[in-house]
Length: 71
Image 1: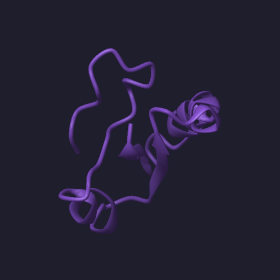
Image 2 (image 1 turned 180 degrees about the horizontal axis):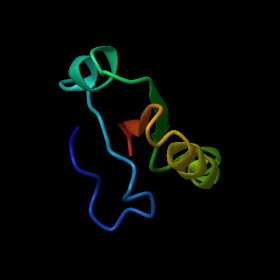
Image 3 (image 1 turned 90 degrees about the horizontal axis):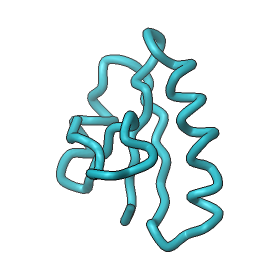
Image 4 (image 1 turned 60 degrees about the vertical axis):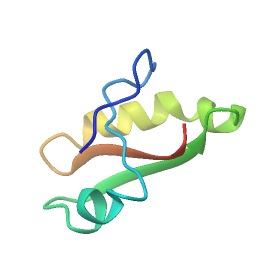
């Protein structure tokens, strides 16, 4: 999966894009949690800590998360 955005508070969550979504998510070996959001979306940012917690809980049972959208 691609690397996270520099300086991102959710830097431990990998990102995906239109170009890599199929490989990163649809063809992943383990289940993937995908968080779609936008940098300007305050409710999306409020979910960040929850997504980070879920990603940590998925370690070993699924991919820790993939962020999609215009973040």
